[in-house]
Amino acid sequence: MLDYGWYCVVIGAIGVFLVLPTWLRMTFDDWRARRAHAKAKEEGRLEPVTITPYIDPAVCMGSGACATACPEKVLRVVNGQATVVDAGHCVGHGACVAACPVDAIALVFGSEKRGIDIPWVGPDFQSNVPGIWIAGELGGMGLVANAVEQGKQAMDGVIATLPRFRGEDADVVIVGAGPAGIGAGLRAHQKKLRYELLEQDELGGAITHYPRQKLVMTRPMDLPGYGKVRYTTARKEELVALFQDILAKTGLRVNERERVEGMQPQQDGTFLVTTNRRTISTTRVVLAVGRRGTPRKLGVPGEEHEKVAYRLLDPERYQHQHILVVGGGDSAIEAACSLAEQTGNRVTLSYRGAVIDRPKPANKQLLAKAVELGAVTQLLESQVVRIDADRVTMTQGGRTLVVPNDFVFVFAGGVLPTQFLKSAGIYVTTHYGKRVEA
Image (cartoon, rainbow, N blue to C red; front, side, top):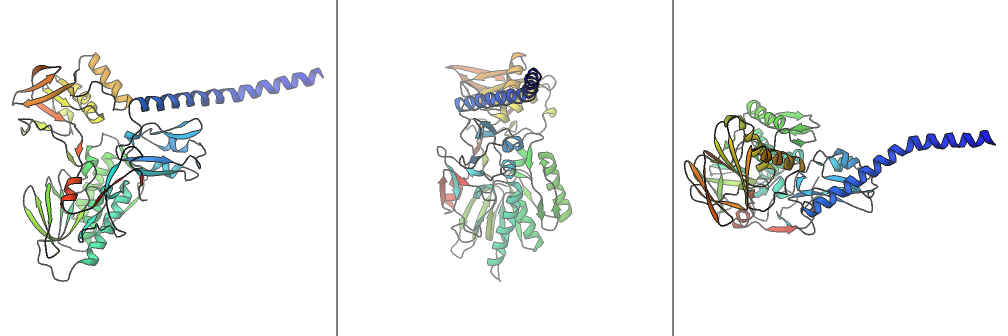
């Protein structure tokens, strides 16, 4: 009996030795997840900017595969259930959807509390206005590879309805040269249409504004006239390089930095598209713009100066300069800290709020360290009121501040094209959890 008793003790000890570390790790992970969820709720990061995962609690088995797959750390397992802990950082990779073993996750636009405006489109992606098609993120397609496919399908719809005799400047105007616009443009180029592919910024659209090394695609694509792209994952730089290679090898024409300012339907069913350079008469229009919209401006005197920009591509170009960064999101923080790392720069960060709480934790830590070291001067509850050639005037707490300045970078978000769509007669509906089409 003694031997048997000792045998049980030894077996029990081995069991505890093997199981205890796993139990402790799971308990610690759950505690961290609950803390992350509580902090996100406190900071208002549970409501989506656009796309967010929806988890069906009746189906979710709490495997954690989705949380592991998400490169943006949007999901955690809390109390045995997959839970969104940082909705604001979802960029629609769809890796969580693919990883879920029980199909408990769907990507949706908006939530019960925050609605997202989405234009109405039919099964062929044509809007309620005959002759205008909508493709990509604007119409509810958030994934890069799928946006390319939708752009192709929208152009197929255009081709099927083109009249035999056309006297306009173009058969089709494509607005936006992101993934959907490139897909539509390649199809138009392949079919030898008279097309105009317009991009207010540069090739790639909103993707070019993503931080370095950002994961932006997780599926292969089939591109007309170019062939199959067999990426299973791609970073921002790889995708931008791919787009450049597409132009070089296919001859696709893109008019960069040409912003569409108006779109007027004509009585004969054609359209007049007005840009910052010209007016184009066209038979059909494909809107392939993203939801980022046009950069929001400050609306202050002097903002038209060439030294004012709305994105930062190469911080290394700026040295020994007085620089003002405006904004309180990830883009503003990353820009301020990158500029502060360059030789001789004096960087000021202006934010109208009392607390900067929207950025990722890593970026908040980066900013805190930069402020502590004196590399960045932080001005909370401040606003720019005037921009001059060599200085910027701001207000803070009832006082006026005038600081030397060589460059201004504004990261104040984007103005969604909702009003632009409505002015063309396109129906726009606010959705509170519309499923992203796969």
